[in-house]
Length: 397
Image (tube, rainbow, N blue to C red):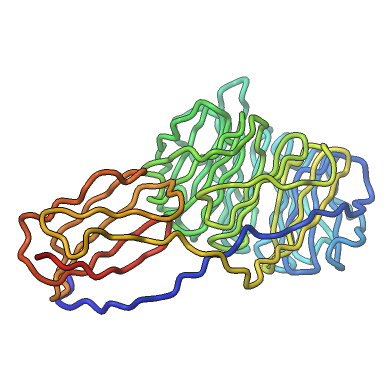
């Protein structure tokens, strides 16, 4: 514990829900598009059924067909570097390019089970997951040599996997059938199951940090963790549509797409999600944001749509904190002007900076905070609520 505590009163700015409109772009095909990935603001790739690979160099305004060399459906394409990319799909197919898609080479994966997702932490090290739902077979393959060899990794869950994401080189998550969530901290040497709290098929997972992540799936399921998956809590989606893909452009702004053209957006790290209007009712299977604020989603019947997220400097008032009575005697209360949806953490520090009391309160914050046993004098109350930290002086007398 620190012997001194420096208190600073900061202005916390809350942004209004990100304004965004989605517009249709020409994909040049009516085939089912399974995934999209942009390496920069202008250059992107889409993969789809029948071995489809297409590329744009003008931000999605036009697309050119590339020769993948395979006829199997390609469920995900991923580029760990500007010119080096991988795509995986049906019958254990995996292909690779090192020249921005001018040529694609077929890789030997040692399996005929389908790959549903792929993620590379660098140009050589990557993971492909999938399996067979009907045969209760999970599939996790890892390569460390750019796809020349693939090593099977096991977890003992025997459930097909649909999504995989690594926020750091050794730390990753995979999700799949019957709400399975697997976690590794050693590059897949060991995959540990986590309790999702849902029987739904989880389709996609994305972590913005090593501790904060979102998993989405059937019947509008959204699961969120802030402790690296030790606990997963349900977040309201407002829909029973299947949610197929989730991504974030930064730690706050994220997007989910799903059945019937469903689009959800968050600007508070996944605490809450709001529905957005899309272009049509075609099911969307994948969403990806560039390093900037441009986002792309693809799906049925060659659907390709784009949005540009603008947060701007629009400010709305953060919920006002009230601590009362102040001065206090044997207890005090806290309240907010707005609605609080998550537990509130209260840390009380004495004038020397030592924490003397800590507790967590659940909304609607009607219970008092007892302080009868504390020495009278000046204290500082730290209130942590929905990612915002506030400091208030509190006098006990």
